[in-house]
Image 1 (cartoon, one colour):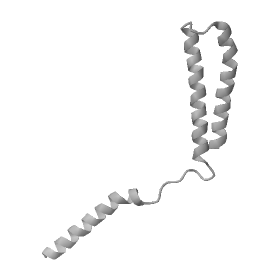
Image 2 (cartoon, rainbow, N blue to C red; image 1 turned 90 degrees about the vertical axis):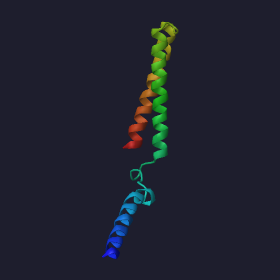
Image 3 (tube, one colour; image 1 turned 30 degrees about the vertical axis):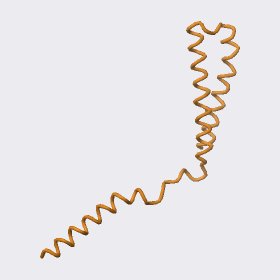
Image 4 (cartoon, rainbow, N blue to C red; image 1 turned 45 degrees about the horizontal axis):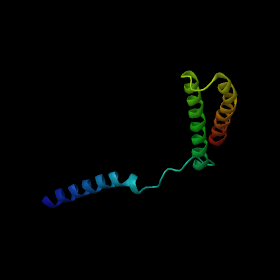
Length: 94
């Protein structure tokens, strides 16, 4: 009887160990078929930089660090860059 209890306990321990270890050694999830995660990361970084630049320009203009004329001159290019970056993201993730 003790041998059966020992074997059942050993089997339960093994099953628990496999349950815990399997995600660590099992197959890794892959990115979407046809998607390139490297290009996606580049597009996301480009978007983040463009939006940060726009935010900084807005802040500097509101606090008086940038004159109205300079603000009006810089704003269209930064908006265009942000729009291009957002389009690139939708093109990569589509």
